[in-house]
Image (cartoon, rainbow, N blue to C red; front, side, top):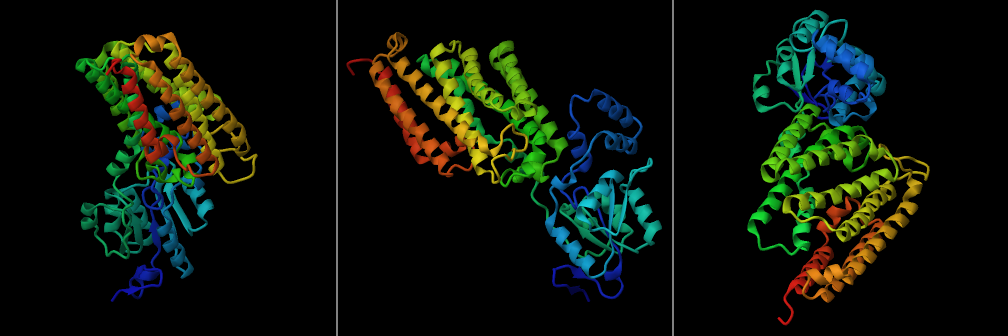
Length: 491
């Protein structure tokens, strides 16, 4: 009869509980794939390293792993560990059971894991031309411990041949089909952490697509709302831009995964947590980018397709490099918001006015400063501590706040001057009603900055506005003011 220990591990009687417990690494002990983590950590600019790795790939997977290990240093401390499994392994080791790491990862990674966790009695890994996976792993364990002489913890169909040679199995997050084919008694099972497709859907950040409604602003400010054909083109352009933006979010999550793992909230992102693999994230990004650019070409021709490609290129530049440069990051971030207006002007045929460019730039510059301010004030530590993948230290928060509030008031001044300009008088029937936009905008932005200074905004400011009842009320007031301004005089 089986016995259940105090930590919940189902223990076999007599000799089986003393059999060594062999544990896989990728997908089992950590949700990440350490090979892809290593490849993704290699700087893009190291052309020689990439050529060496590419050449090694033609010689087989073992040679590929050797080449990657020569050029890429993986920070194993930042990996998303399966803490439930680790607790179980530590409890078994405390009882005197031998715990052995058996992984297809290169031995340099396996040894780094052992130094970090200080848990394993022995480490068996790929190296010297051998890729320790599947049948190769099963053969090694048979030779090392004998048939049915070990218990094995794994996570995928590649481990079925290992379980067939084992005395017991510890499946970790396996699918139902794999679970039914395990050819060994199950000591304990660890549940999956969530489906990869659900993780991919979350990583697309569909809630951020609302930002792309900015492409309709040139159409609205030009008071060209009676052309359903143009409105449809603008809508399709917004959808295409949303697909491109989601592609960039996926690439950004791959680049930022290690920094995200050190963040109290961002560590739950799909790539950082390991729920979404790096290959799937990059493949999905490629599909989304191609679909978005093709949709843009179909909607607005080569001009719109080039603009969408340019947006992705600038976003990639921001994620890969400019994000780490103080001040340059917020200016480019604000510029990406203004870029959406340029896309809207291209597809609608209405050139974005200098007034709109000036107001929108200072408005979005204020929001970009607010985003950084929230990140810095939420970060605990002394003023000189630098944020990961950022060019700021926590002591910069006060200065960024001053810059952000200043940008906000400059935008309000531009809006007030526009209301009084001849341009507004020529477009709107009753431009005096536009004055209502000035206090509404000021109130909303001042409220955001006041709430941020009190620590009440713990997320992206745009997401906060979308959940804020007062923000929606002010938006409704702005729409009403606009309708009054465009309504023919005398009605």
